[in-house]
Length: 181
Image 1 (cartoon, rainbow, N blue to C red):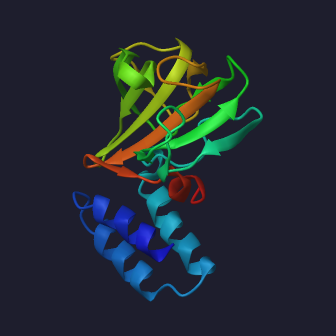
Image 2: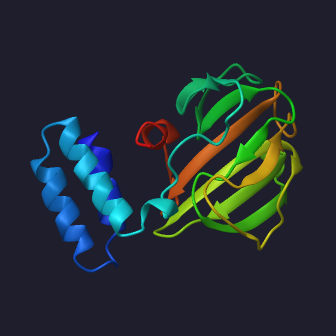
Image 3: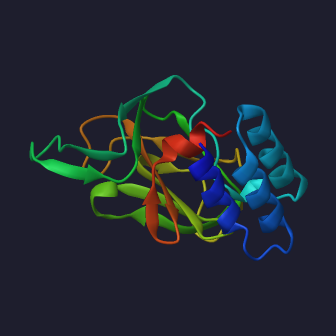
């Protein structure tokens, strides 16, 4: 957990004084109680809204495929899966996990219908296999805003949401951020 908090602290480079305080807190933290102090600073500085925390679904769902290497459902070969797949009912509402601007809304290869949101501090989130969009490219959204609906478009074996977090062009395991909310 400490490793991921340090990663978040380093994303705050442009905010004077905040980065140093977070690094000191994280370096000293020994318990979950101190973790909450770090999150308090993030909230106090108004930065939490830009970090993709929490679940993109509120309705009943389950994780059907995790981040990392897996057996590809089509080729049966080992391949890297760059996000989390949430199996859910068709048309379950998908929510933005942080404030940002929708930079892509359309069909994109294996993702099928995709929404990509650009957030502050180098974060982007992707929501794939949608049946339909609720928002359009260029719109600003806040955490918790409905953006689309679960579907099975693109390279998909059934209704699910493919959810990715990208930080400075590197994919990050979303489960770490979901568990930090």
